[in-house]
Image 1 (spheres, one colour):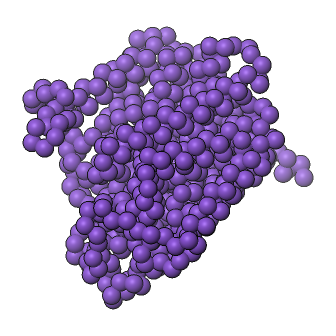
Image 2 (image 1 turned 180 degrees about the horizontal axis):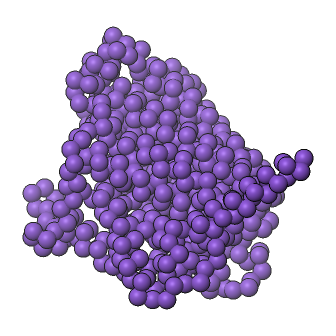
Image 3 (image 1 turned 90 degrees about the horizontal axis):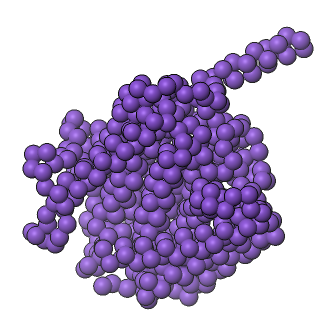
Length: 528
């Protein structure tokens, strides 16, 4: 296994960065004296900073390492999911943001309870928790893999140290510290990505045109295959999956929705959301193309034996960039993980307190809930470290594909519940509960009949039903689960009474309120 020795200057830069991270966390400590301050910053953060925070929340070491790794080994098909985000959300963010700001206090899943009852709330919040932990383990694992190659030492120890820093930042500074660290990390991310891509492009013999020619001739460009085949990974599969991913991430994910709630006004929250959406996609594209450029570069340069795809980018950084620049870029890599995981921990703690602890311990003092939130941060952080260590033992083949697969499995029809809640006044609690149960059965069937375990040629399906096995790509599992909830949930609702609803819970209610506001504005203008 290869090891790289960093210069003392690079180590100093990394240590200084980690110290600044802790200082930022501690600088906001005095403000964290209530639950709303700890989780929502009580409207103290400007919209532009929230937009940068959304960017940083969605960009982690998965982007910094897994996207270049994917670009190095394949074409850009897994980027299609990200490209669907603005396509879907530009038309929906206008009513999703004000709806949440009007009807919930802290937890996204409070909306699900108000619309469909307790079972829908706990099902959706539990799905969120499972997705977060699987993703957090991936972030820690990829970061440790890179640090192990560039610095050496015990990988488990590095995961633990980084994890403890993240826990401390959250405990001391709450969401406010997380957001301002995100702002710093967002600028670093753009700068380091552009620097790295420029160096790779102009270090390759023949320059950018040669990079493109080499990549194209080896099938590293494009988003194919483009055939209408749902049984394998195709453009169509990723596009459909991406549309549902966009709604799920920006419409039902606590990490994102919590940012909407920190803004001072609805308009500020919408501006922040649009900023985050429009910045995130170029970053995903930038880091995917870095992997493509690395593939072209290493066609004429040697790589150490045994190097894994997620380690190629760190290897290039450590061996081809000047002293000091390497330290800055590695600091940006660590920053991406810290910011993403800090946001995950804060949102997990918010859900833990609002959806679970408050249900068990009702009408308790705010200080008790704040203490419970901080304990949830600690416990969640330690669990994430443990999951990261399991990832190390499992290996790193196809990490990005694994992440997307887990996301599809743990999505569990949440978008279906959300869309029925927003758009159908006829959908009711009983019908949606039947839809959720049907979705659970379907997801279990699809997962068991398409997942192989074992080693080498000895791999076998968890459940083999022959021709009745789930034969489509696993990313379609997440799509089908949403469609099952929408179809079964709506039809089942027809057998039960139409619910009496608060109009604020529906898209039509938002539309009606907007019409009244516009009419009032016209009257005001006429009076002037």
